[in-house]
Image (cartoon, rainbow, N blue to C red; front, side, top):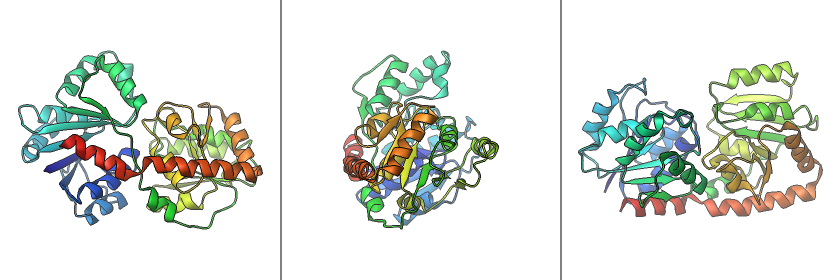
Length: 345
């Protein structure tokens, strides 16, 4: 069985990190190839290639160029399965596969996107999704939001929750920096680093915060940090290849989002046995609630109170840490890989 995964690039992000972990597992038993529009030459790409997975690059820097469809169509005909990820690939793959016998699969990675704020996208998306043989959502909440938007729900829709290489994260033993907080996320519209920055005004002065990731909102967040006089307590590390080590060295993990499909980073943090504090948004809430601690989106004082309690009560901290470690075991990537292969076959 020849499988082709298609995504714009393997820049740092949840879907990209998922593919970097998933493709090596699929390559053990199947003929797997990754197609990207452009190369970024990072550790995600290295992990995929080291597993023997070939990467095809279109050398197309304009992801929204409809000419991509013609390039994709020439490649698709040589594969049994084409598995698309993210926008605008969902559109281009749908168009490129029309008339071909290739089985087309799409994974929905988020509970929300800006297109759903515009009514005229609904008929377009109904048309595009129609071509897919299977539509996988990474959580129940993701599927519910999608089917509500499309106004349809049939046997094509499936739920396969994301997975993490939990053994990789739990095996790393890096000395912990006392009072250190970490948030690993792109600086994108869906994320809310700003609330975390504002919360630092109320958090124990000995605590420090590290942001890992890059994106369009980073400069804005750096300016807020400077304005609040917090530059000596907050670091912006940018995109990093040693994410597992950075998480392992942190004392508490934070996942602050405005919307989320699943919460992959939260599982990675829990896999390291760290307490996770996360916003109460669909997708993320269901992964963390009952193990880590939930706070209302945008409420910096509530977030600060939760962090201070964890910093000052060692018994409470250990209780939450233990719960998080147990929860992470429910999301091991080997389970997810087997479920995807069953859908392909």
